[in-house]
Image 1 (spheres, rainbow, N blue to C red):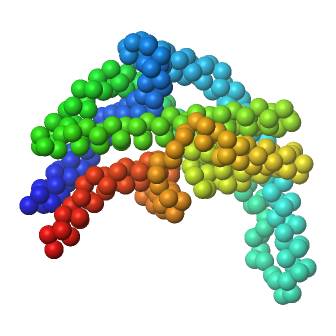
Image 2: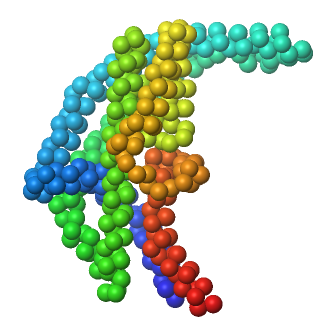
Image 3: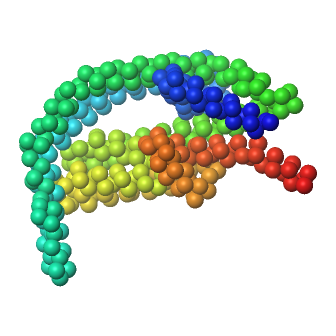
Length: 345
């Protein structure tokens, strides 16, 4: 009966959630922001700073960083994207050269190799074929503006809501415990505390490590004269948050971005990215993130690939904490139930 009731409740909750996607998005983003900044707030509280003041300090710094990003980083990124767009012919020529060399190599080393006509000719992508793409982009400009405004509204609402989440975290935890029978409420409190600690430590630590990784790659690649260093830094910071495959994808993108500047630029950028990723893995992660979320390497790989296949980029980013949550719930609920069944048998 209990299992049936749980399934019915989950189905009803899923159907209800499908009808309020925007509200659900705001609450989920707010929860992740609250999880991420709570460890920092707790550290300030340990320094005898009152809780409301500690939360206010953290959110003030967060808003300052957002403003800096909007005023400084966004214009620089747009500028580099414009330069990147202007260099498309150079990229086409470079890639065409690579493909022609590959064709020549294959024909000289593989007897009887014959490539289909124009298989290695990307020049067939003429301006006439690019025109409809540009027209479609301009046509959808209004949709893009509306989508951007909606995203800002959701982000602002989530930040405000996360502020109230942190101010009322004790009441929220007690409300969660009240959903359980009296005999299980202490266990529910421990469960809530463990989930909060695991998620908070992982999210805040991952954001800090990824930000440092992207920043260092940006600065070092800019110092050696790479034209798209900021774009690469942003890509690297996001990619580092995706375990196993994130930095491999970022390094593959870097090869394409570096192509017009020659082989030496490709080499040095690859050295910078590989070296920084290893420093992050072996120095920053142990110092900033501390203990892992308690998921084995095989579990990490499965969580990343399964999350990506099911939910795309959000699944790649959140696969590991989701696996940690499943492990915690298993330990608190499923394992005791299985032991009880075995004892009865």
